[in-house]
Image 1 (spheres, one colour):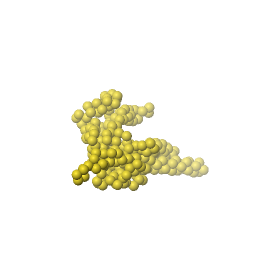
Image 2 (spheres, one colour):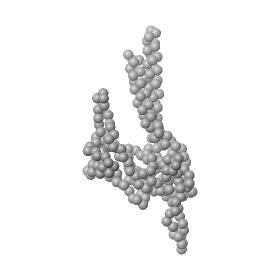
Image 3 (spheres, helix red, strand yellow):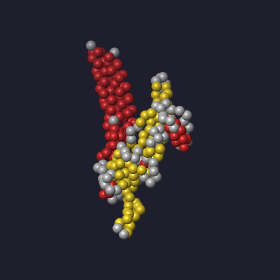
Length: 250
């Protein structure tokens, strides 16, 4: 009896852990590649190559967006709406009925005396999600209008999740950098040519924007916990099999 229970729990851990590993594998790989790179000062970067820069988000020429759930000024947000449903066995589960994101062009300042331009709409952004059961006054209208603009009609949801990237947030940016002509800079009695650093996604290169905590959690959070669950589950299954064999011999 004990051996059977041990095996059942072990199999459940293997299934749950394996599912977590499969879901987080690509995210963990992207975060790990970004974290492995050494950050470079923006002012000293010539461009025309892949790099990583660390700095602070600042609004660009296009300004900011309004995050639907929180109403905060952001340069990128992701909205998920979920409904509570019952699966075939009558257990409670969460069904995602909407998953949309929106971003704009922003600047990154790293204190080196220059800034870099990043288009969040073309990036793979990693931030920490905030879960909300209830929305504040006015948020329902913002959510409805945003989703309707994406062709999604949603009357109600049981839970909302919002990720956001705000001016002032610390980020690491990994992508392909290039220099583009910028507005001339005044120098004594004449204007001198200047360039701006643009970090983008080019052929064979991905653009990753992540808050430091989200990047580290992607590598060592659910992904690592999933592997631990798998290993513990396998050990419990083997322990159950050994227990059955011993009982059979006895």
